[in-house]
Length: 284
Image 1 (cartoon, helix red, strand yellow):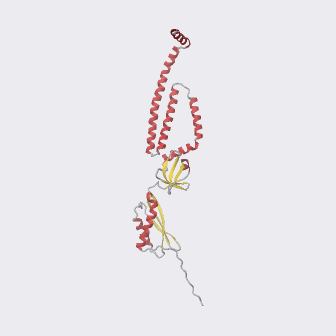
Image 2 (cartoon, rainbow, N blue to C red):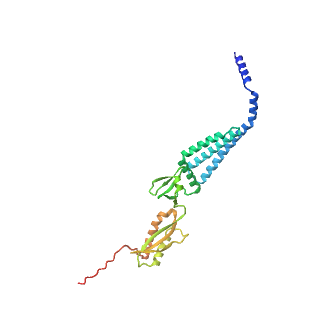
Image 3 (cartoon, rainbow, N blue to C red):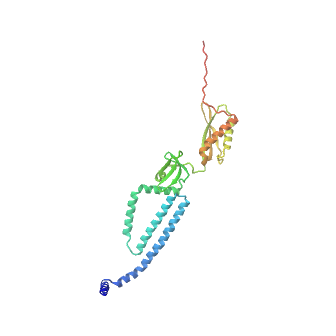
């Protein structure tokens, strides 16, 4: 019985299967199969290599860890998809339909994730254009804060009163941003009033001494000290001085304290509002 079935199966395949044609087809396909395998091997290696290069570039740009990992995965997967399509094409398969299907799926995904993709693209622009970086103090739409994280879709700020402010990246690239810490120095503008009887030269000398006694003043540009207005009870001086950005907030208080100390040493009077009343005697 066993021999019967073996002979039957052999006879069936001998009658219905053209082994010579299959052999010729396999022989003709061997170069294509080898080419496809070679394409996959080299392509897989290149995908990993290029993805690692991109990740190192993001690390040098000090991008957020989440952004680095996401871009690494995106680059690697995209290249691998292209490698698979190329390998299938090497085998002689028609990949036009596959590409069309992938394109349609890509369009559908892009439309569904339009806002998210906009935020992602904006995040990439922020990282590569160096609009701001972690630790910078910025202002957008009247909101101020220190940049704590630049993530895939959002940027997180810490406000001066320690509130957490999360802003979509697309907003940060479409509106005007003021970066207060982009430069090492900032100009601080102060005003101080002195009595009308004060010696102008002595006032300027006292203010200059106050600035020199404060270590965070930058002398790359000379301070500007001059009279800005004559008010009801005082002569008002404008003081424009460059200070280190890292000490900008504290500089206003420290310099004012130094000015008060120098005025007292020099005997410069700081006036206060007062009203002079003149009595007119009665004719009686």
